[in-house]
Image (tube, rainbow, N blue to C red; front, side, top):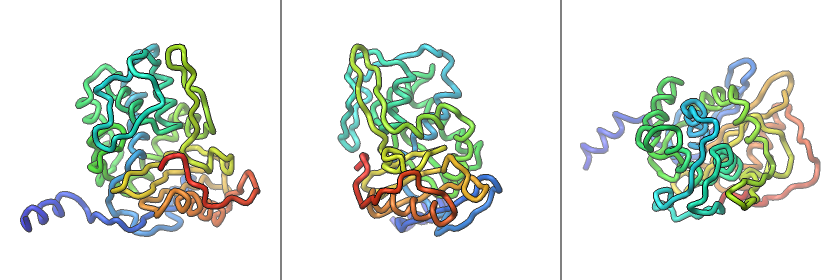
Amino acid sequence: MFKKLLCALAVFPTVSMAQSYVVYDFTHDRILESRAPNNVQPIASVTKLMTANVFLENNKNPNCSASISDEDFDYIKGTGTKLPKYTPISCNELLKAMLVHSDNYAAHALSRSAGMSRIQFIQKMNQKAKQLGMNSTRFHDSSGLSSANISSAMDLVKLAKYSMNKPQIQMLSNTKATYVRAGRQNVFMQNTNRLVREEMFDAAINKTGYIRESGYNLVFVNKHQCNKATIGVISLNNASSGARSNFTRNKLEQYGCDVLAHEDYGLEEDEES
Protein backbone atom coordinates (compact mmCIF):
# COMPACT_ATOMS: atom_id res chain seq x y z
CA MET A 1 0.00 0.00 0.00
CA PHE A 2 2.82 2.40 0.92
CA LYS A 3 4.56 1.74 -2.40
CA LYS A 4 1.31 2.48 -4.27
CA LEU A 5 0.95 5.79 -2.40
CA LEU A 6 4.50 6.78 -3.28
CA CYS A 7 3.82 5.98 -6.95
CA ALA A 8 0.66 8.10 -6.92
CA LEU A 9 2.52 11.05 -5.38
CA ALA A 10 5.21 10.71 -8.02
CA VAL A 11 2.67 10.90 -10.86
CA PHE A 12 0.46 13.70 -9.52
CA PRO A 13 1.24 16.93 -7.64
CA THR A 14 0.04 17.28 -4.05
CA VAL A 15 -3.67 16.63 -3.71
CA SER A 16 -5.30 18.93 -1.15
CA MET A 17 -8.86 19.35 0.00
CA ALA A 18 -8.37 22.81 1.53
CA GLN A 19 -9.80 25.75 -0.37
CA SER A 20 -7.51 26.92 -3.14
CA TYR A 21 -8.02 29.91 -5.39
CA VAL A 22 -6.54 32.38 -7.84
CA VAL A 23 -7.64 35.94 -8.54
CA TYR A 24 -6.27 36.60 -12.02
CA ASP A 25 -5.80 39.65 -14.21
CA PHE A 26 -6.38 38.31 -17.72
CA THR A 27 -5.56 41.66 -19.34
CA HIS A 28 -2.04 41.82 -17.95
CA ASP A 29 -1.63 38.04 -17.54
CA ARG A 30 -0.76 38.08 -13.85
CA ILE A 31 -1.84 36.65 -10.52
CA LEU A 32 -3.35 39.26 -8.20
CA GLU A 33 -3.87 36.96 -5.24
CA SER A 34 -3.78 33.23 -4.62
CA ARG A 35 -3.86 30.47 -2.08
CA ALA A 36 -2.43 27.02 -2.87
CA PRO A 37 -2.95 27.66 -6.62
CA ASN A 38 -1.19 24.46 -7.70
CA ASN A 39 -2.94 22.06 -5.33
CA VAL A 40 -4.74 19.34 -7.26
CA GLN A 41 -8.25 18.16 -6.47
CA PRO A 42 -11.48 17.00 -8.15
CA ILE A 43 -13.16 19.76 -10.16
CA ALA A 44 -16.64 18.28 -10.74
CA SER A 45 -18.74 20.10 -13.37
CA VAL A 46 -16.04 22.67 -14.12
CA THR A 47 -15.03 19.78 -16.42
CA LYS A 48 -17.81 20.88 -18.76
CA LEU A 49 -15.77 23.87 -19.93
CA MET A 50 -13.31 21.44 -21.50
CA THR A 51 -16.17 19.30 -22.82
CA ALA A 52 -17.60 22.35 -24.58
CA ASN A 53 -14.25 23.30 -26.12
CA VAL A 54 -13.54 19.81 -27.40
CA PHE A 55 -17.05 19.43 -28.79
CA LEU A 56 -16.99 22.78 -30.59
CA GLU A 57 -13.57 22.08 -32.11
CA ASN A 58 -14.28 18.52 -33.26
CA ASN A 59 -17.92 18.46 -34.29
CA LYS A 60 -18.09 18.76 -38.09
CA ASN A 61 -21.88 18.62 -38.38
CA PRO A 62 -23.58 21.96 -37.59
CA ASN A 63 -26.96 20.20 -37.66
CA CYS A 64 -26.04 17.30 -35.40
CA SER A 65 -28.48 15.96 -32.84
CA ALA A 66 -28.52 13.24 -30.22
CA SER A 67 -31.03 11.54 -27.95
CA ILE A 68 -30.53 11.03 -24.25
CA SER A 69 -30.24 7.27 -23.92
CA ASP A 70 -29.56 4.65 -21.24
CA GLU A 71 -25.82 4.93 -21.86
CA ASP A 72 -25.97 8.57 -20.67
CA PHE A 73 -27.38 7.57 -17.28
CA ASP A 74 -25.48 8.76 -14.21
CA TYR A 75 -24.32 5.54 -12.56
CA ILE A 76 -21.80 7.41 -10.37
CA LYS A 77 -23.90 9.89 -8.36
CA GLY A 78 -27.45 9.04 -9.43
CA THR A 79 -28.28 12.55 -10.66
CA GLY A 80 -31.24 13.09 -12.97
CA THR A 81 -32.08 15.33 -15.90
CA LYS A 82 -34.96 17.52 -17.00
CA LEU A 83 -34.40 16.42 -20.60
CA PRO A 84 -36.64 13.70 -22.08
CA LYS A 85 -35.05 10.41 -23.05
CA TYR A 86 -35.08 8.93 -26.56
CA THR A 87 -35.97 12.30 -28.09
CA PRO A 88 -33.72 13.87 -30.74
CA ILE A 89 -32.23 17.10 -29.36
CA SER A 90 -29.98 19.34 -31.40
CA CYS A 91 -26.37 19.49 -30.24
CA ASN A 92 -26.68 23.25 -29.81
CA GLU A 93 -29.54 22.70 -27.35
CA LEU A 94 -27.53 20.03 -25.50
CA LEU A 95 -24.63 22.46 -25.26
CA LYS A 96 -27.02 25.04 -23.81
CA ALA A 97 -28.33 22.57 -21.21
CA MET A 98 -24.79 21.55 -20.28
CA LEU A 99 -23.31 25.03 -19.81
CA VAL A 100 -26.32 26.89 -18.40
CA HIS A 101 -27.81 24.22 -16.15
CA SER A 102 -24.81 21.86 -15.86
CA ASP A 103 -26.86 18.92 -17.16
CA ASN A 104 -24.76 15.76 -16.87
CA TYR A 105 -26.80 13.74 -19.36
CA ALA A 106 -26.33 16.47 -21.98
CA ALA A 107 -22.56 16.31 -21.41
CA HIS A 108 -22.55 12.55 -21.91
CA ALA A 109 -24.66 12.81 -25.07
CA LEU A 110 -22.36 15.48 -26.52
CA SER A 111 -19.31 13.32 -25.88
CA ARG A 112 -20.63 10.75 -28.35
CA SER A 113 -22.02 13.24 -30.87
CA ALA A 114 -18.84 14.70 -32.38
CA GLY A 115 -18.03 11.87 -34.76
CA MET A 116 -16.08 9.78 -32.28
CA SER A 117 -16.60 7.34 -29.43
CA ARG A 118 -16.91 8.53 -25.84
CA ILE A 119 -13.46 7.09 -25.07
CA GLN A 120 -11.95 8.98 -28.01
CA PHE A 121 -13.68 12.16 -26.82
CA ILE A 122 -12.11 11.85 -23.36
CA GLN A 123 -8.73 11.30 -25.03
CA LYS A 124 -9.26 14.56 -26.92
CA MET A 125 -10.03 16.34 -23.63
CA ASN A 126 -6.76 15.13 -22.13
CA GLN A 127 -4.85 16.01 -25.29
CA LYS A 128 -6.27 19.54 -25.19
CA ALA A 129 -5.30 19.86 -21.53
CA LYS A 130 -1.75 18.86 -22.38
CA GLN A 131 -1.71 21.30 -25.32
CA LEU A 132 -2.79 24.13 -23.00
CA GLY A 133 -0.07 23.31 -20.49
CA MET A 134 -2.57 22.04 -17.92
CA ASN A 135 -0.04 19.58 -16.54
CA SER A 136 -1.92 18.81 -13.32
CA THR A 137 -5.18 18.01 -15.10
CA ARG A 138 -6.72 14.61 -15.93
CA PHE A 139 -10.18 13.82 -17.32
CA HIS A 140 -12.02 10.51 -16.98
CA ASP A 141 -15.51 11.59 -18.03
CA SER A 142 -17.16 14.51 -19.82
CA SER A 143 -19.52 15.62 -17.05
CA GLY A 144 -17.30 15.86 -13.98
CA LEU A 145 -19.25 13.28 -12.01
CA SER A 146 -16.09 11.23 -11.68
CA SER A 147 -13.84 12.29 -8.80
CA ALA A 148 -10.92 11.23 -11.03
CA ASN A 149 -11.41 14.46 -12.99
CA ILE A 150 -8.72 16.57 -11.32
CA SER A 151 -7.06 19.93 -11.86
CA SER A 152 -5.68 22.95 -10.02
CA ALA A 153 -6.84 26.56 -9.80
CA MET A 154 -3.82 27.63 -11.87
CA ASP A 155 -4.54 25.06 -14.59
CA LEU A 156 -8.13 26.30 -14.69
CA VAL A 157 -6.87 29.84 -15.32
CA LYS A 158 -5.42 28.44 -18.56
CA LEU A 159 -8.72 26.77 -19.46
CA ALA A 160 -10.68 29.94 -18.71
CA LYS A 161 -8.32 32.01 -20.85
CA TYR A 162 -8.69 29.55 -23.74
CA SER A 163 -12.48 29.41 -23.37
CA MET A 164 -12.70 33.18 -23.77
CA ASN A 165 -11.94 32.63 -27.47
CA LYS A 166 -15.23 30.77 -27.91
CA PRO A 167 -18.18 33.19 -28.40
CA GLN A 168 -20.71 30.39 -27.82
CA ILE A 169 -19.19 29.52 -24.45
CA GLN A 170 -19.13 33.19 -23.47
CA MET A 171 -22.77 33.68 -24.44
CA LEU A 172 -24.00 30.62 -22.53
CA SER A 173 -21.81 31.46 -19.52
CA ASN A 174 -23.81 34.67 -19.13
CA THR A 175 -27.28 33.21 -19.80
CA LYS A 176 -29.49 33.79 -16.75
CA ALA A 177 -32.17 31.29 -17.82
CA THR A 178 -33.27 29.66 -21.03
CA TYR A 179 -35.59 27.17 -22.68
CA VAL A 180 -34.01 24.05 -24.15
CA ARG A 181 -35.91 22.69 -27.13
CA ALA A 182 -36.28 18.90 -26.87
CA GLY A 183 -38.60 17.50 -29.50
CA ARG A 184 -41.94 19.18 -28.88
CA GLN A 185 -41.00 20.26 -25.38
CA ASN A 186 -39.44 23.50 -24.17
CA VAL A 187 -37.54 22.67 -20.99
CA PHE A 188 -36.91 25.64 -18.69
CA MET A 189 -33.42 25.78 -17.17
CA GLN A 190 -31.72 28.35 -14.95
CA ASN A 191 -28.04 29.11 -14.56
CA THR A 192 -26.43 27.18 -11.70
CA ASN A 193 -24.51 30.28 -10.60
CA ARG A 194 -26.62 32.80 -8.68
CA LEU A 195 -24.16 35.63 -9.50
CA VAL A 196 -25.38 35.29 -13.09
CA ARG A 197 -28.90 34.08 -12.34
CA GLU A 198 -29.61 37.12 -10.17
CA GLU A 199 -27.73 39.42 -12.55
CA MET A 200 -25.21 40.53 -9.95
CA PHE A 201 -22.34 40.27 -12.45
CA ASP A 202 -22.06 39.64 -16.18
CA ALA A 203 -19.86 36.68 -17.00
CA ALA A 204 -17.32 36.26 -19.76
CA ILE A 205 -16.69 32.72 -18.52
CA ASN A 206 -18.69 30.97 -15.81
CA LYS A 207 -18.91 27.37 -14.65
CA THR A 208 -19.91 25.92 -11.30
CA GLY A 209 -19.06 22.46 -10.03
CA TYR A 210 -19.94 20.24 -7.09
CA ILE A 211 -19.57 16.66 -6.02
CA ARG A 212 -18.96 15.53 -2.45
CA GLU A 213 -15.29 14.85 -3.14
CA SER A 214 -14.63 18.28 -4.68
CA GLY A 215 -16.55 20.74 -2.55
CA TYR A 216 -18.08 23.75 -4.30
CA ASN A 217 -16.04 25.06 -7.23
CA LEU A 218 -16.40 28.06 -9.51
CA VAL A 219 -14.56 29.45 -12.51
CA PHE A 220 -15.77 33.01 -13.07
CA VAL A 221 -14.32 35.71 -15.33
CA ASN A 222 -16.06 39.08 -15.18
CA LYS A 223 -17.29 40.34 -18.54
CA HIS A 224 -16.72 44.03 -17.83
CA GLN A 225 -13.32 45.48 -17.08
CA CYS A 226 -12.46 46.31 -13.48
CA ASN A 227 -9.91 49.11 -13.16
CA LYS A 228 -8.98 48.61 -16.81
CA ALA A 229 -8.48 44.85 -16.43
CA THR A 230 -10.48 41.67 -17.01
CA ILE A 231 -10.59 39.94 -13.63
CA GLY A 232 -11.35 36.30 -12.92
CA VAL A 233 -11.79 34.32 -9.71
CA ILE A 234 -11.15 30.58 -9.79
CA SER A 235 -11.88 28.84 -6.49
CA LEU A 236 -11.98 25.15 -5.52
CA ASN A 237 -13.43 23.38 -2.50
CA ASN A 238 -15.54 26.17 -1.05
CA ALA A 239 -17.59 25.09 1.96
CA SER A 240 -21.02 25.67 0.37
CA SER A 241 -22.63 27.11 -2.71
CA GLY A 242 -23.47 30.30 -0.82
CA ALA A 243 -19.89 30.62 0.41
CA ARG A 244 -18.68 30.07 -3.16
CA SER A 245 -20.85 32.92 -4.46
CA ASN A 246 -19.96 35.30 -1.66
CA PHE A 247 -16.23 34.56 -1.91
CA THR A 248 -16.27 35.30 -5.64
CA ARG A 249 -18.34 38.45 -5.19
CA ASN A 250 -16.06 39.77 -2.46
CA LYS A 251 -12.90 39.19 -4.49
CA LEU A 252 -14.39 40.81 -7.60
CA GLU A 253 -15.44 43.86 -5.60
CA GLN A 254 -12.05 44.00 -3.90
CA TYR A 255 -10.38 44.34 -7.30
CA GLY A 256 -12.75 46.98 -8.65
CA CYS A 257 -15.60 45.04 -10.26
CA ASP A 258 -18.99 46.66 -9.76
CA VAL A 259 -22.05 44.68 -8.70
CA LEU A 260 -24.80 45.23 -11.28
CA ALA A 261 -27.68 44.72 -8.84
CA HIS A 262 -27.39 46.35 -5.43
CA GLU A 263 -30.02 44.51 -3.42
CA ASP A 264 -28.89 42.79 -0.23
CA TYR A 265 -28.21 39.17 -1.12
CA GLY A 266 -27.86 36.55 1.57
CA LEU A 267 -26.42 33.05 1.51
CA GLU A 268 -29.06 31.68 -0.85
CA GLU A 269 -28.03 28.37 -2.36
CA ASP A 270 -27.07 28.03 -6.02
CA GLU A 271 -29.11 25.72 -8.21
CA GLU A 272 -26.36 23.12 -8.32
CA SER A 273 -26.27 21.35 -4.96
